[in-house]
Image (tube, rainbow, N blue to C red):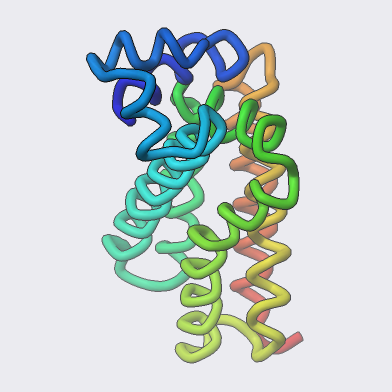
Length: 183
């Protein structure tokens, strides 16, 4: 999986034949198909591993913050920084939706990122920072917004500038959302 991940990150899924993967991994084609049904199955495993890492890194930024508002903004910044990484831009944001299909990609994304956002929204409501509202609905809308921000970064001619712009807009939205507990 490590060899495939590196190849997918540097060349993109479509430019990596299975023979290149097995050669880089030092295994036989039979070994590849013993563990994964096909190249797409291996790619899905790579995407899931990467999404777990992204979620863990984002959650670490959230948990290091002293309060839910700072945590949410810190987690947003950490996530957007992660989205600048070429590996994430190529595998998660560019190839995953195209190779796995939008429904499967969203399923993987929801399995990892949505759970963290549900917890964050529940904590914010529990601490009185966020007005009580449907937790899963708000978490899904936040996930949709940050996923679109990530795609904007991945597709941008100037990813660093786009990252700054989406952080400004999303940061303002999140601060407003979290700052208005009476509305």
